[in-house]
Length: 484
Image (cartoon, rainbow, N blue to C red; front, side, top):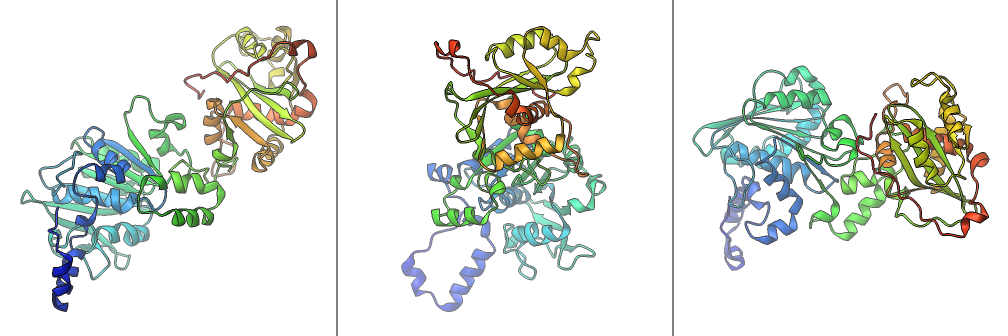
């Protein structure tokens, strides 16, 4: 995959017809213009892209989670698929290789977007096949057209360097899961986020071929079911079973500062993290569509004169509390410490809550006034008997959500960076397709509502006698297994 350099002096001496031949040749060998041929320059300029390619040697499942305009479709997906289809790998390639012709799928959202984006990137425009990523001389015959969609291609045959050939089939998610059943595949490229059932079907198609599935998309649907396969709980899988790399605007050299500034201004605020950094966006179902960058702050020592309170959600599977400090002068609330633990007796939770300050009053889930599943006693009364000062919160769900949203969207709610369980729930807090709140992993979100609804009644400052000795904020408890 190399082209011989031509000196500028020689180029200036060429007749017009020679220029046309060079232009045509370059158009039909587009792949040769990607990535410097060797050395540290290539790795430094496109570090994330190369890292993704190399991970193919050890991972069956890979996700390139990237911002817009960083080259995820053309410079990653189309480039790697072409290498596998032709078997013509660059000298620096350390990723997965095939020594034979392969069977491959490339898929996207709809038949139209597959035609306009994936097909165009791989083949070039209609009437100019071979001017896309797949070299023109490698395309065998005329690609088979797709029925029912003008100018769309369904199957392409590609010459492999082994002497055999590869088959590429273009599909779309709107064909539904059934269209992804059937034959085994070596490589499947999913450009744009697929539904989970289609992704699962693709994994099944590559199980017996030593094949691989790779995904390239900007995470505009937030921490969806597919994203959570790679980011369980919103963070990379510590066991590294599935590979994910996040690429930002700052990870590529081809975007100037002016371009990045112009793009930033054109993007809605709630999508900026996703479109610039590849950070999962707050999707259309997000309850609090506020970028984390707008609310997360580094931990600091809370001034004694700020009023404090907490919200408490109790249960055997998970008991959660979020502590807040209220700067009344600026009307800004800081969520500064969290308690997050399951399958423990009330006395264990009470000790942890008292450690933040026994004088702090909490607002508790009003359902705790009912029967406990543990021994039949009223759960709220058990906590009161153990020394907590609690009030039953107003559990008007939509009102509470609206009040928290108002505070967060106006810059009057901040969260300490150490409250990682709270941030995980925040990323997943969403409504389903019918507009209902998804009751899953939302214990701290409920506790936040309770605190917001009752803060005017519960917030108080540290008693004078306790101000003699400075108290450092507890930065929060980092618990594993966050979701009940």
